[in-house]
Image (cartoon, rainbow, N blue to C red; front, side, top):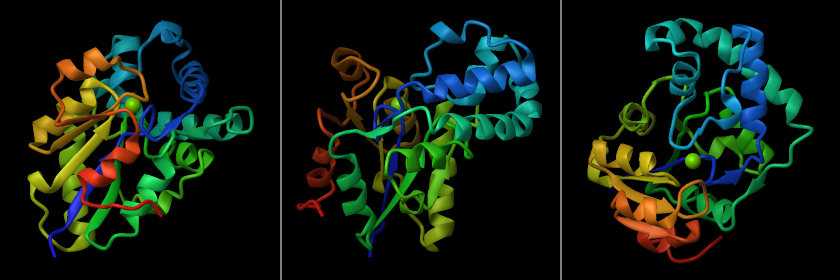
Length: 228
Ligand SMILES: [Mg+2]
């Protein structure tokens, strides 16, 4: 049985966090670094939290890498506190799409996100996703650049399944040109959705293999016909 790996971005692709990420980032940055810099106008789209901290603080990847364990502990605590104040919503079709693929024995569903590995399950749960649906993850505390995340996820998927999975059997789904680029860097199929933070024109310019207005359109692309 050939296994296919489908890697989902979180914000703008699976769910709308209504600003919880920025709020938790602000609290963690103030706690650890004493400043949130230009966070209010910072664009998170397509970036990793590691890269975001480098950019806002003007710090090297190495410096931020050293602070990352403390940052994760801080942002996890703050996001848990904020989860009661923010309503997170799954985007239309997202819950059903992930469930339908997760239940197929020939698919592994995973996450490639700029969020940290500790805030990822908080956001997923807040929007109604069972984090267990995503046994393979590569997160924004593991690389400063998004292009470095899909290879990590692929390696973990091979270890998780005990099978070799080829790049061409990987699909990356995301809402920004950076999601498309990280798929292309791996040689994976790039599926872009217009439900997030980028315009249709910007996504088209990134030349994804498919551009969808609703993530449920992923199922026919994967040869899965019915929603659960
Ligand atoms: Mg996104």
